[in-house]
Image 1 (cartoon, rainbow, N blue to C red):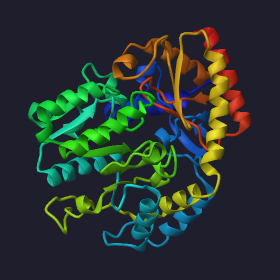
Image 2: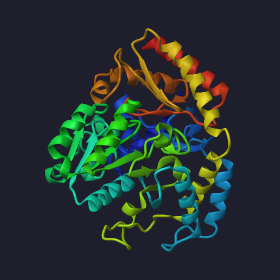
Image 3: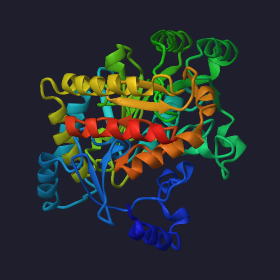
Amino acid sequence: MQRILSEKAFEEASKYIPGGVNSPVRALKSVGASPLFIRKANGTTLTDIDGNQFTDFCLSWGVFILGHNHKIISKAVKKAVDQGTSYGIPTLQETQLAKLVTESIPSLEKVRFVNSGTEAMMSAVRIARGFTKRDIVVKFDGCYHGHADHLLVSAGSGVANLSSSSSDGVPADFTKYTLSLPYNDIAAVKTVFEKFGKDIAAVIIEPVAANMGVIVPDIQFLTDLRTITTKYGALLIFDEVITGFRLSLGGAQKRFDIKPDLSAFGKIMGGGFPAAAFGGRADIMDILAPDGPVYQAGTLSGNPIAMTAGIETVQLLQQPGFYSDLETKSLNFITELKDLIRGKDIVINHIGSMFTLFFTDGEIRNFEDVRKTDQVRFGAFFRKLLDQHIYFSPSQFESNFISAAHTDKQLDKTLKAIKQALRTI
């Protein structure tokens, strides 16, 4: 398979864009490959500028649960574009999507739209501190909540490939009120609250970790987090940027029947456009400006194009049987995948339509476990799949996703490609 045009495009991009990419993991450095430059996408098929086609399991990092370029969403968006692309003034679409989102997510009484998951989480932390009048936030090692300065502490995703799990350019004073603990370790949480409980504004967590690969929490761990935060008057914040509308219409919180105080959403909710949201209890959300003293704003927040895409997406996800059908398809694929990796020092973590293959012989329950995996072997595996026109998420620290658009034929082809790849690494 030739990728001459992609290689030339990367060389050209590197002259003008740092690293040649606008988000680090796209450079494919961690898997020993050079980036693909994509010309178009449809369903679950990516087509690069060389004309190569790939079955996509990254799906723009989980966005396209319905597949790329869904006809209904695209038609609605094209119609919306003809009316104008941004006003900086309220539209009916904002309220319509807000209704759909709050009806879908059990804990959301009010919601505000922003443009990215980073922005949503940054805003959720600010409002938590403003509401509680406290400074400390607790997060978990390997959970990535966007690149806001105060959250780049022991983070996952692309940050996990840096020599330290943070970033240069972040003053120590910006992170001194952020405490990071091992995922799935409730004893560590109890110890921190015993020491700092009266100063902790919030606990922030991915209810299913997806930025250090998929790690499903102990349900008791999440339940205890809810109990502890309530006891000490801290807020519980669920980062559902990835799991929201992925694990159920009501996200991970609906699936696990745990009600956080605040939540953040993105990815799927935008239908392929830059849209995200944070929301929760009305008494907390009502301290936002213009009604309260906590400031947050954005010129493109609630953009009519993104709102239109979000409305169509959520309405499609509301169709009866959508999630049960996706769950069945995913489970069938993962069951066969488990058979392929048996005895090969590979572990699969999965829930719903999310999965990660870890190249190790040990259980994966936290970030430290992920760090011990064989990333060189994973890189070789990724490249072998790419040679067979299968595009997995290009990092051991990320999730793969199955969509409603994946066909049985494509999934069968993928299993055969995995079997072939494992023979040669």
